[in-house]
Length: 146
Image 1 (cartoon, helix red, strand yellow):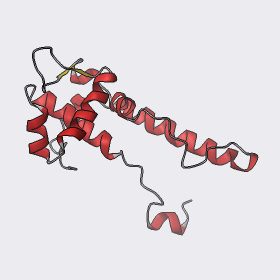
Image 2 (cartoon, helix red, strand yellow):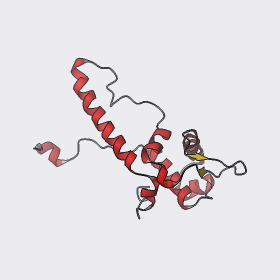
Image 3 (tube, rainbow, N blue to C red):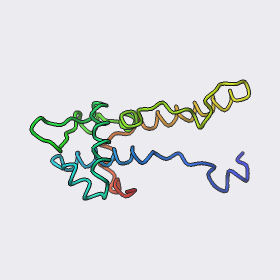
Image 4 (cartoon, one colour):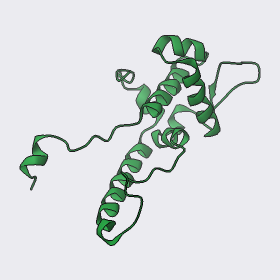
């Protein structure tokens, strides 16, 4: 049974970090416009070029995209859109291991909180693993959050 408080509004938001959203935007752009350059994406989405370069560098380090030798500012996907999961994107961009909501130490009184957040994180990872870039491309409003 849900308490009256939790029925009123969500207690917190589980949202993707902005850098992950921008990485998804870059990847979706590469799916739909394979010859798009960083300059074109920066202009189209009003994102700074250095920030997009940082995102692309992380996606490249994560093995999701690569830069053909002859193209300076154009990247290409290393895999088909159906092979790149949202979890792959998160892992490529979120390179730091983040403590769970500030609970860095394991003490007996925090063990249950850690267990719950571990379950939440596992559920989120499982969900992100189920969806691919191809799935997003099939959604008519995939770019609407921007």
